[in-house]
Each structure stands twice: as C-alpha cells, then as structure tokens.
Length: 116
Image (cartoon, rainbow, N blue to C red; front, side, top):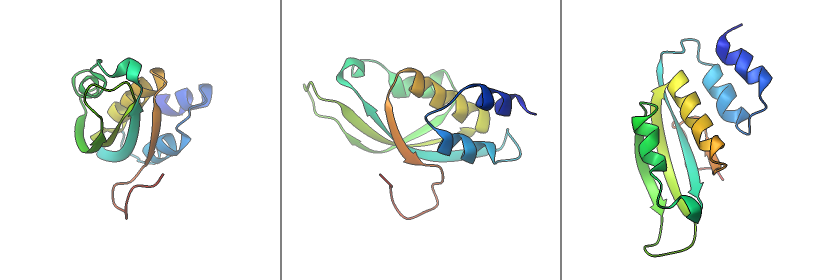
C-alpha cells in the first residue's frame, strides 16, 4: 500500500472527490491539474494564501476568475487551475484544508464548466 493510500485511510478528508481523482493516477510523479473554487474569508484577505501554493508546494496556479472587492470586509472567491504532481497537489489541497477554507471544484479540467 502506498504512503498516499495509508494517509488517506488514516484521515477522513473533506475532499474525497479530489483524493480519489488524484489517487487514481498510477504514476504519482505525473503532472496533472485540477480546478477548484476557493473561498477566502476576510480573516485571510491579507495573507498570501495562493502565493504559498506556488512557493511552498511548487504548484503552478492559474487564477481563472476572482471576486474580491477592494476595501471590503467580505470574503473573496478565486477560481483556480492548479497544476503539479499528484503529491504536490495533494499537499497543496491539504494546506488549504488546514486553513479551514471552503473549497469547491471538480477534479478534471476537461469538461463543460464549473460545477457548484
């Protein structure tokens, strides 16, 4: 059993859709990408949440949409395409989960449009 699957069995992730899609790829070093919508509460608006996905986890992040008002106290939303190895994406999603961010998305970029 791979280390990824062992971790998956030990922890109950909010992202079983992402985990199963990522785990289904046989080569864990293969580059893949996922699409997600991340809601960032006002308490994190001054934090480099997306930047850390790039610098700390080596991911390529494309912001395909955003809703964030200047000088606001409301949450922001970012539509992201995240590209990297399966391990990198898994660690990046775990980081976002550790911040208790609301994350919605679909595991494959080849499809019609965003699903909410």
